[in-house]
Picture 1 (cartoon, rainbow, N blue to C red):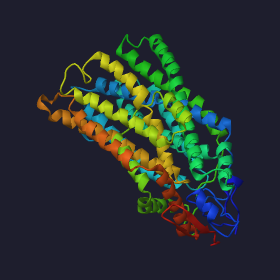
Picture 2 (picture 1 turned 135 degrees about the vertical axis):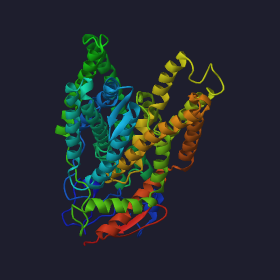
Picture 3 (picture 1 turned 90 degrees about the vertical axis):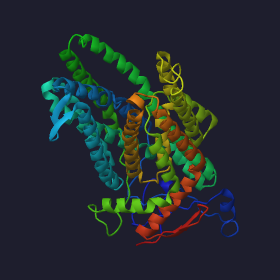
Picture 4 (picture 1 turned 180 degrees about the horizontal axis):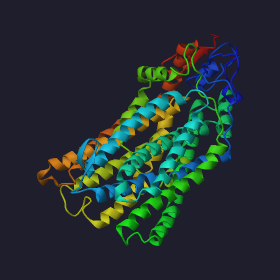
Length: 519
């Protein structure tokens, strides 16, 4: 028997499944077994395909950063919606257009397009997420969808008058879909990047040899994943400032304020410009990303049906990952936030060697305070988002205290995701996050409409305060990332036992015993 050893960076070729041994604590490893013998300790791993697992290089990480610097959303998520709604407004008669079988208000068309694109995203994320964790083809998912996104961005250069509004509908919807797919599967790559750095490889070897504790290994893993995610968001934000300065210059050069036609043309040029920026900055990642083996297709399953089997298994076995479900619920209720400044959070975490949970808790406190601020607007006309100075203060508050949620939520997702299942879990979390961003505004709009006169824009903050408070307390009280790590170990051990014929048992304390048995 020759099970996979993570620090050896390769799989054995005898088709043997593996359960890695993970003592629940250091004392247990010292006392277990015959006198003078130590039970081997390894990081629990999924059953991967045979093949080399390359060490992550510095330039591979830098190219991963560069992709996100280019994929900043300025084109598909900022200027494209503006261009789309401009075309609808200019083509409409009395704010109405014939669309999808009948005459509709332009706001209804926008909402319908958003709903259709979201439905398509659900299908795509479930299909891609179910299959992408198997084999070695994951890198092609991002490449193909990036090419689609480039095509959509460059296509806007030909769509800038009201007669082209139907083409604008297609570009707008396809832009939303391709942007969400690319950002989701770009993010899904970072747990593997972090865990294959030389630093973490050495740490895993140190844990196996008894040089460091399991708690220390988990802390180093947390910090390494935090470093990659936070630096990526920080670099994107810094470079985006300079890109926006260039865009402002281009807008003045095109005299976008002179006429409606020039404004339309200017938006199309800016979308194309930001797409070209994305293309240039993404090329290094496609060149430097190393191919790493994914999950091994279980015996008796074909490549065609393994995705359906993966979805069925995920929905029937995910209940064993209680901490993952707790964060999934909290992630839904808190919704999605923008990212601007994460440098201070990362500095504090690194300096104090904090885990992910305290950083999440800090952001949640500020989220509740923000909702409280808005709720006060129901009782006062001088405070609670009623004045211009509050708008400026809100932007500062958002950037300094709330926006890092996006980075740390991404890190937390990786913390509750079993190794080897990143594409599926990131797909599920993206679906939940998008559902939150769609449902939340609809509920807020309904609350405003239900107020006397239908004009109290402060009323939704009652709902938002309750939602943020319940979510924050739920995550503070129930989310246990250390327990999540033990649940993932048991999940992977059970998966190996169930699918690949490994006899194993996982105790309630998280320690795992296993034997590697040839099929």
